[in-house]
Length: 128
Image (cartoon, rainbow, N blue to C red; front, side, top):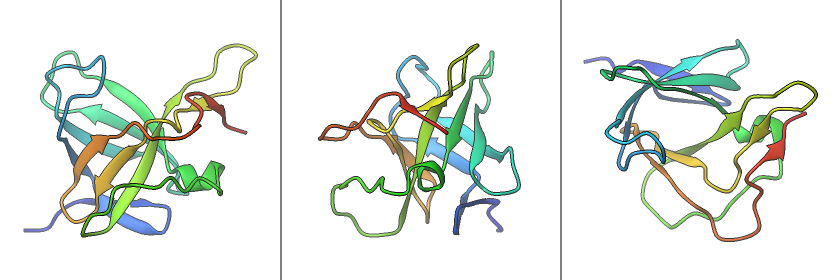
């Protein structure tokens, strides 16, 4: 069986992500599909699957906009990728990224959890 993957930065991760815990404000949704919105592997739509109405979030590879973003995560076996949720811009404001609570994706399985980090990471970091 071939697993569909999506190129995120320099690595391929599963296109189908399974949230181990529902995202805040999206109860009952655990299955998501990651869809690229650009050719660079930076901006993605994260769409819930099997739910009505469908939920959609925008996420980015944080290394593309925040090269110094390297939060310490709990030790684990296996490769992980980070995605951060983007709050779209409003008139006159730049879009922002939630660096405080990234999505941590197990590359081998697509299992994903949103983690609130220790430290002084911004909830709304402007994306330039």
